[in-house]
Amino acid sequence: MRAPLTRALAPALVLLLAPLATACGGEAAGAAGGPKTVTVTVGYQSKTINTVTAGTLLRSLGYFEEELAARGKRDGVTYKVDWQDYATGAPITAQMTAGKIDIGSMGDFPLLINAARGKELKQPTRLVSVTGYNLRGGLNTVVTAPDSKLESLADLRGRKVSTSVGSAADGTLVRALQRAGIDPEKGIQKLNQQPSVGASALQAGSADALSQFVAWPGQLAFEGKAKALYDGAELNLPTFHGVTVREKFAAQRPGVLDDFLRAQRRATDYLRTRPVPAAESVAKETGLPAEVVYLYNGANGIATFDPALRPELIAALKQDVPVLKAAGLVGDVDVDGFVDPEPLERLAVQGGPAYPAAAAARPELWSKGQEGTTTYDSPRELLRAVRGAAGVRAAYVPDAVTGTLWFADRAVWVAEGAELRAFVTAAGAQAYVAQHRGSGARTVSYAEATGLAG
Image (cartoon, rainbow, N blue to C red):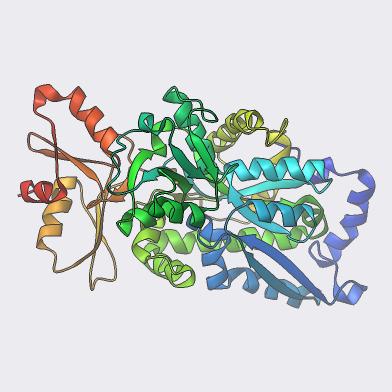
C-alpha cells in the first residue's frame, strides 16, 4: 500500500497544511480568510446497489451533511454536498480527472482505470475505503433470456454478448470465457453497452447474453426477464466496489474526507443492523424492487458491507491489472501507490466497529405483511416455510457450491435422497448431478422441490 499522505507530500506542502490543521481541524476556516461556502461534489451510482453506503443510502440518511454541519460550526464554513448520479464508473472518473468530482465510488476494474487516468492526467486519485464486496466474485453474473437454449458458458461461442467494457462485469466475462477455452475477443461478438441498453438488447433478442454487475442480473431474474447462465462466484476471485478521492482534495481538506468516511461507516452500521429498512430505502430512491436490493444488500446478501481495505481485496485488485492491460485499457498500475489506508486508520484511532468477514449465507424468507425476514438452516426448511406462508415477497437460497444467494423460485433445484439443493445456474446443477449420480441426484422443478420439502 502507498505511503501515507503526510509522508508522501513535499515537505513544503506539509508545513503549509500544518497550521491549518492546528487552527481548524485541517480545513481552511472562513474567519481566516478562506471560503465561506465549500461545495463537496460526490459522484455515485444509485443503481449499483453495493455502493449504497457511499451513495444512495448515505445520501438518503443525510449522515455526510450532518458531519459537515458539525464541522462548519467549528470552522465557520458552510458546507454543501453536490450528489451526482451516474450509471457506471467511467463518467465519474472523467469528472474526477477534470477536477469536478471530489469523491467517487465504483467497482474494482473501474477503480484501476480511475487510478491510471488520474496519473496520466496529473489528477491523481487514491482508494480510501471499500463499500461492498464478495470474496468469490458473486456480484457479477452472466444471464440469458428465460427461454434461451443456452445452458453453459461454452454455448456462448460465436454469440452476441452485451457488457460494459472496462467494468467488473466485463472482467468476469473475460476470465470466465478464458477458463472455458474461448477467446474473449474473437470467440464471441462482444457488444459494448450501458447496462440498461444491454438489458433491452437481451429482451429484444439482439443480444444472446448479458454480463453485468449488481443489480441488473438479479433484477432481470426477479422480473422473469432473464435466467442465470454463469455465476461470477465460480471464478472464486474477490470482487468489490470502493471509494476513491482526488489526491488534491484529500490534501486540502483531510477533515472533510474524514467526515465522509465517518458518515460511510454510520451508513454501514445502519445497513448491517437494519437491512430491511435499508433495502426499502434504497428501493424507494432508485425505483428498484426492494426484493432485488435485499438479494444483494440483505442480512445474507451477496454483498458484504465493510469499509476496510482487506488484504484479499487488494490482492485481487492486483490480479485485475493484467486483464485491463490485455484489453488495452490501462498500462501498468501502481496498486500499492493507489491504495491509501491512512484515512481509515485515522478513524480507527477514534474507535468504531471492526466488522467480521463474510459468513456463509443462509436461506431466508421475506413474507408479505412482515417487517422483517426469517432465516432457516436448510433449503428444505425454507421451502417448507414457503408452503405455509400466507404470502411471499421473496425467498432466498444460497447456491450449494458457490454460496451465492439467489431467488428460490429462479434457482435450479436438485433432489438427492432427503436433501434439496439449489443452484444459481443450470450448468451448476448439472455438474453436481453428474458427480453424484450414485446417490440418485436429479434436477427437479421449483414446484416439485417445494412438494418434496414435506
